[in-house]
Image (cartoon, rainbow, N blue to C red; front, side, top):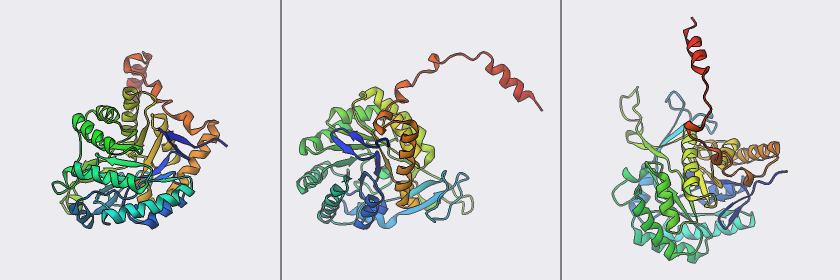
Length: 351
């Protein structure tokens, strides 16, 4: 049987599958369910110091959409092409209680050869640095710094910071890096024209890995009510995002070098999607919406399909990392096809 283990810098994961943050991971029961289903790491619901972020969770709303943009039933059996549109907030526990919960869960995860990752969403940088120190002093083993949360421009001012500027990314990551020594994963937005530039800034400032890419912010009119669906702009993700994420993974691998760890997120729905992300340059994959809408058994199904794929190909997970990205060519490098347009036009001319 082929091995599913991968490395994200100094961290060895038993598989590439990381269960990304969401409401289903707000409390210990959800984190334990994700670990029991086989996740190599779990990122519980993110937190920061703001009361506004905690209150924002009371105003969350979600709609699952089909490819025709019609709402789907929330029955934990969504079609493969379903997308999620949602508002969201932050963990509602007091910071000390949140950290204590994560420490207990990470000790349990350690016994299962897994990790529980503390995720901080930036609001005030000084307070974020303080919380990062608290996370390290409590004994947690990995810190995620999320500066790519899609709700940043929609939330109340000062609640969530969404960073699109490389100099800001460099400053923020350097401050947190100087405060802690534990592995630091930096989650970046996809709402930028230069995601690779943001990733370079994070690497230069001391990040151990970058996670690419946060969901997009979107607006969808409801043709029945003639009003905005959910009443607001909202974060939007789905399987359609996978090729976009893969493109940025490949670009970041080219920009940062093959040895710098990347974590892919936004679009993974299956075990084959894990393979696609790895082939594009990711060392690990965060899946969130698929698990949130399909239940924790999605983790087990994804891992089984991924393991079966590796067995069929006679490869290990590590063998996949960057294989397709490193073969990525330009248009000019492709062979010409002089007969293509002739046959295409002839086919189009047929009645």
